[in-house]
Amino acid sequence: MTKMLMQGNRVIGEAAIRAGCRFYAGYPITPQNELTEYMAEHLRKVDGGTFIQAESEIAAINMVLGASAAGARALTSSSSPGISLKQEGISALAADELPAVIVNIMRGGPGLGNILPSQGDYFQATRGGGHGDYRTIVLAPASVQELADLTMDAFDLADRYRNPVMILADGMIGQMMEPVIFKKPKPRQYNDCYVLKGAGQGRSRFIRALILDAIRMEEHNWKLYRKYQVITKKEIRYETFKTDDADLLIVAYGTAARIAKGAIKRCREMGIKVGLIRPITLWPYPAEVIKHFSEKIDTFIVFEMSTGQMLEDVRLALNGAGCVHFYGRPGGVIPTPVELTRFIEHHTKNTWDRGSQ
Amino acid sequence: MKKVFGRPLSLKNNALHYCAGCGHSITHRLIAEVIDELNIRDRTIGVPPAGCAVIAYNYFDIDMLESPHGRGCAVATGIKRTLPDRVVFSYQGDGDLAAIGTAETFHAANRGENITVIFINNAVYGMTGGQMAPTTLLGQHSTTSPPGRNAILDGYPIRMGDILANLEGTKYIERCAVNTPANILKARRAIKKAFQYQMDSVGFTLVEILSHCPTNWKMTPIDACRWVDEVMAKEFPIGVIKDVKGKGHDQ
Image 1 (cartoon, rainbow over the protein chains, first blue to last red):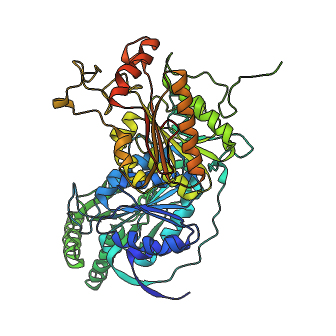
Image 2: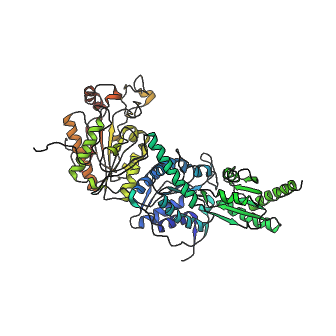
Image 3: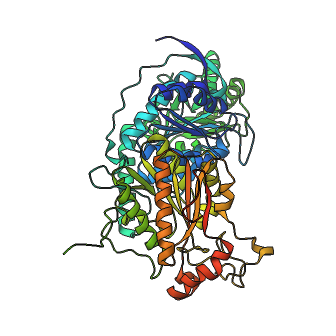
């Protein structure tokens, strides 16, 4: 296991290839181009590896649909506006119960926005994103090392539940270089009963999303729902940081969580006992964990690089318990630990003042 | 007694839902006959579209993956690149292939994907109830061009076969019809040639079928078959448009 210094976007490509990804289709968009370029250079050298520069994000995700149905571990990547275009195919993958991994290196929006790091696609990622009653598993790495680990895990989760899995990072994590150790990927374990290879000598099969009969369509939706219930029960991941003695908790994910750790260090030097809950799966969401903390902590600060999207999930988790504050910087602004420290300091004072009244 | 005519093995024993006199049913049968004749049922994967043929998997007894609307060539690309030794075809209508899926079709053709496309051109959106298609003729009435297609307001019918023939990646394109016994036999030969080219790794092949739609053309099936020859084929001439391996059978 050698330690390498690599850029986040390229790490995703390397981790995917090591995990057995053999199909990649993508369309250039900043700030994720290095991943597409890495696959162009390296995936075609792998036995059975296919790289296609697609004519659009729509074509790319539909190529992934075909490759996945044909049995390949398949990947596509983009950034926010391109992910909007992919939603048609992600909805189809969910409906067809086909595995695939989709990477979103988020940038400022809405619209074309800019090419700077942002967390504005939380709603889109965690609420299905496309049309219909479905969910995608959403993994939110906060370091380049975690990009490597979660990329490998994403393929395993996609296979286990035959469902699209999204890696939701931002331009900051995609562009930065950090040391990384690639873990040994697990051998691919999946039931290939759904894979279309041609009927052979047996019965022909088909994969489809159109179910005209309402009752059968309803049952398909409930079947997906039951699968999502299992995922919610089994696959929640999160990190807690300095929560044992905390009087106040920050809830943040991805890049924002890294900034929060810097702020926590400063706050603790000032004597303010702050901790962090960092959801690693954004769907399923670690709601129970947050709810559990509200039994001993009543001040929560949700910190995002958006105007407040995960904020809704924290409020739902707390269900009226505790006091929730929000600090966010949307549009590609990267907030500093100093400004977050100031916000925490301000609200600590206010909360304590209220407590003493 | 010797059986001289029966259902192709590659067709399921299901009643077709297509309207009386529709060209889809004939084309389905032709494809199934060709799959049987080439003995490739075991390794053919089809991609049905959104449109009248969306439930083609109820009829073809081969593996099939339904495509989102217009993306047939992208889906087929993903399958073929993953399983290069399989025979992969997409089956698409004119709205699917020449409107919402133009980009996917054009670029799969330009990449020279070794797939076959069966393109049903009936000059109308069938399943949604007879709206104007990119292939609707000038002056042709549809529910979204009630006074007839007007070039100034609605543009011109697109000859996709001819456009795609200009791309280096396409190797065989023929326009056929299924309105007469003679045309049906030619269409069958064209479909077989396209599949054979794919099996020989020649590259992208497309067979455009002028397919009569009595329901949405508001004609009797017999009048619809006549209209294909007398009107539609004037705008979309029948014959080989491109064949890199030499002469077409009717040239």
